[in-house]
Length: 265
View 1 (tube, one colour):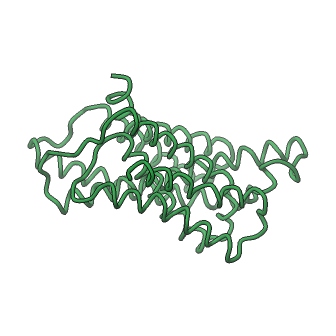
View 2 (cartoon, rainbow, N blue to C red):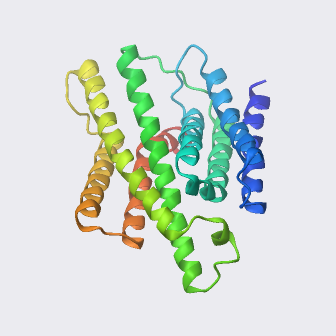
């Protein structure tokens, strides 16, 4: 049953990904239906798999990241229509992430979190951490879209390849700015709730492990980038590169640490 549910969640991502590549101009009812299916598949898997206890294994961390990214992306497409063009980049990436989760689940068994933690603070911290990762995932996809559009523009290939289905550079930069600002604010909340949990568990403000250090460095990079961008209007590839660096750091802090502990160790 678990394998069938896993494969169903994985396959739910395919239709909207293929549709966004084959019919990028069509964003009507069929697009929304397929995007809803893509969102519901991983989310249903997460809800059923978690049950009454929280899981802290790599496979569940990846499925949670996929679900959170789609839950943020769907309303973003409603609010910012230009974001719909990112589907052709986002969904294939999330499919690879979900495939990695499937393989990780086959290698390592599920790990239930046994440590007693205050329910409210723990739930808030997890929700904020997932929202941060989702926002930064979308910002990184937008940064990649900027690279691809600018490269296609230089090569005069705007009407062919994946660049043809992506939003304009101007639209991507506006989306990147908004997602970056949201990620900074939400990550600050994640650090605050993390400190509260650490105080509850050990009486210390911070535990300087890999996850904490990488999260703090990510926040400093994002906050510095946001401030410089707001004051001096820095744009283009420099901003996109730093967004991708920040995303890499946050990925190393969360699924990266779990990958090393569960798969490589």
